[in-house]
Image (cartoon, rainbow, N blue to C red; front, side, top):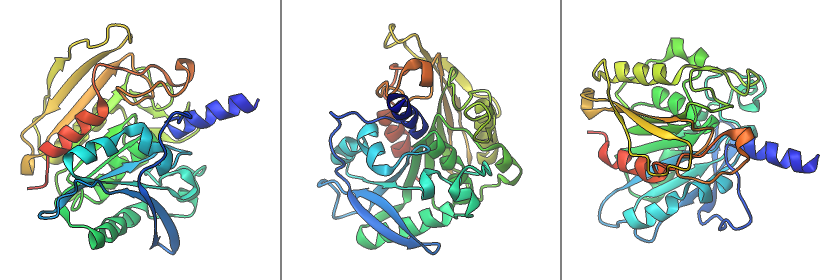
Length: 309
């Protein structure tokens, strides 16, 4: 029973951490926001430029997760060392982001936690310590963190240049009020065989955790909001790993206002996983990991190519 509970906890978190993972290298910090003391971790690479402002990547954990476990799983710190950008790993209230699903199971929703205001305050707090380029503030996340990335960007489009949600769609109740003020470039990564956040929309975790929109509809919604082309250019990517029973397809909507672009990576056969990452739980629970792309590298390359004008 205890072993089953441990695996379930990994699934709910959206990631798993094994004993061989390195300890978190980011520094723990606290921030007063919304009448609460919020916690986050900040990774500052030694290569952070001193003569110019740096990019900031905000990484949001999945449900029941926390920033400290997400950090070694995503491997953004290694990229930050090479590329010279900051990475923040915030913690949600009650381990769930208030992501627009209006889910009574989440403490953050029941307590009306304003996570958008928290993130805005977080950006300000980091900017007091380090020179942040306001044109290069980005957000990514998995599962609940991915769903929240959509919600955050639509509500804070004046400060977020681009997002890259993984295994997370737009919350269905949020659709009616989805009206970003400015264009936001969006990179979506979803598996067609995700057993927790369904690719074609519907109930999350079989209806127990709210609902999300169809993944391709979410991409079209962002493309329309950004003023991109109505029809995407679609291409099948090389099968880099013939043994993972997965193929990747990329759909691209271009020509958006302020240089915005929407890109959807569809992983046919992929599950509730981080492409190129670890199989953190059994396939029967979360589905397969696709290895045709390294999501962490692809996301950073997308961010680099899409600063705010």
